[in-house]
Amino acid sequence: MNELTSCDGRELKGMFSAATRWLERSAQSINTLNVFPVPDGDTGTNMLLTMRAAMEEVSLSTDGDAASIANAMAKGTLMGARGTAALSCHRYFAGWQRGWTANAPLTAATSPIHSPSHPSTPTKA
Image 1: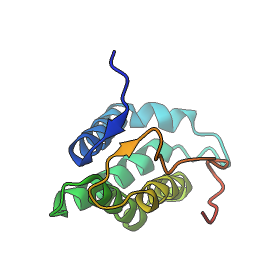
Image 2: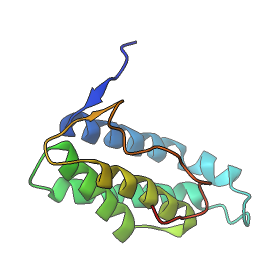
Image 3: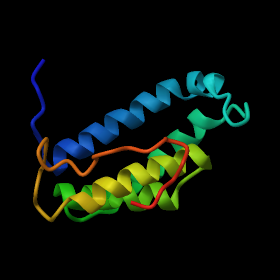
C-alpha cells in the first residue's frame, strides 16, 4: 500500500465519493449501533443523506482544485445536515475548508486538522 503524502482536488473528490459509497453499504449497520444520546436508530441514514448533499454540492462546483472541493463539501454538509452527527461531520469539513488555499494540495505538513474535539460537541474553530 502506498503512503498518501498529498491530495489534490480530483483525489479528494474521489475519497469523499468512496466514503459516500461506503456509507450507502453501511448506513443500516451504523443505525443499529446508535445508542447515544438516544437510541433513535437513524445516525447512519442521516450521515448518508448529509454526504449525498455534500457530493451534490461538489458536482455543482466548476473548479476542481482541493480548496474548491473542500469548500463545496463544507457548504453541502451544512446545507444538507441531518441530525447531530451530521453537524459534527460539517464541522470536520469546515475545518478542512478553512485550511486550504486555492490550488494548494493537502499535505501531511499542511493538514488543517490539528486537535479534534469530542465528535458530538460542535465547537468554534
